[in-house]
Image 1 (cartoon, helix red, strand yellow):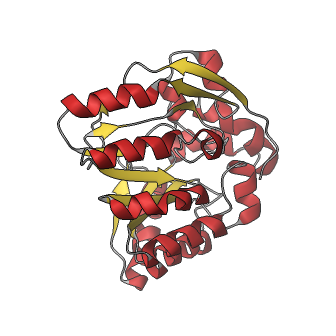
Image 2: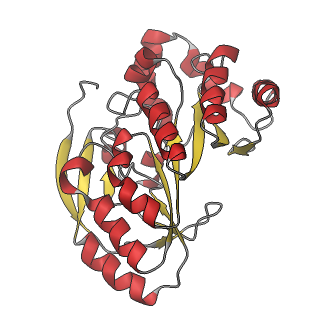
Length: 276
């Protein structure tokens, strides 16, 4: 695991289930504000209005106080639907091992008959396999690269890629519906034929649906990536906005590469955020 230190605190929970426009989801449920995985490319920081907090994203986590009580009330009055756990934080980041907020939320959602779609970068999700198997759940693991060293630099506190691949295998073997989120694909870092193929192979071997996402340069994202990229790939920060413009030559090339690799495995895939 990486060496970044995380500041922890609490924040009052006003709403547990928020309406969302994300495909396939009716609600989002985020037990935490901020995330301890420290991924340098995360665009969830753009949801904040506070620039100071946004630029500290990945180095602080606020636990939502009274979330369980708020959720217990909301499931009684809100229509049943599909809940995304989570959309702007990782539900199985390191603090979850201690406070178990995500697990307690799942228990409530199962009792009230809500479906749940989980997305994480952590093997900790296997802790809740008993709940996942007892409900109508699907689980997605985000894998940007199978290179453990590179992952340790860009996702310092997340589970190793090999551990995420093994988590998908275990879930799939247990009959859980699984999917793999390949993204963001970062130009000149994780976009090579070999890098993409290694991740696609995991989706193929685990019988997981594949969703592919490009790097999203929302507000403050480049600020978070710049220190690492200036060291690792000098000059790339300046090129990224041009490469990632909608319908750019680079994005067309990237899509062709993804399609060619997936076609070789007979694997269907869907694109997320490629036209924005």
